[in-house]
Image 1 (cartoon, rainbow, N blue to C red):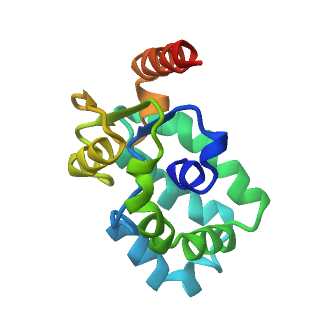
Image 2 (cartoon, helix red, strand yellow):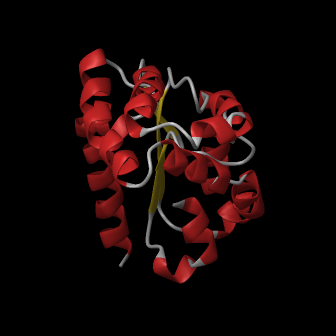
Length: 173
């Protein structure tokens, strides 16, 4: 979202970032491995891809039940669009140059912002939340023990932050 906000600031009234990729935080080690193995992954049928996807989701969720629910939702689109080939296309499309290109422009946004971050995210470390907060002139709302998938694992806390941000945006209008 911050890439879109920087590229089209006239369309951005406020910005909330939660455990998102940014700066040089991408690709994470597991994605680097998937890129190296892309020719093999591309040949995997959806049934063989699902356990690997499940392992990634399990690392980023607070509970096994939440990870299983996420797997049930996310595995379907991969199955519908070629299984491993879909995953290989997705991994190949992710490019750190996209986030690096906008990092210096974050302070120019001048919109209300929130950074909500799970402190136990194995993919996007807490240090990146602090970089986002500095760039957006805000603070970090830390979700102690929160992992990567904050919207799914901490919906109440995230909803409260969104409501707070919307109220600030409305107050400025």
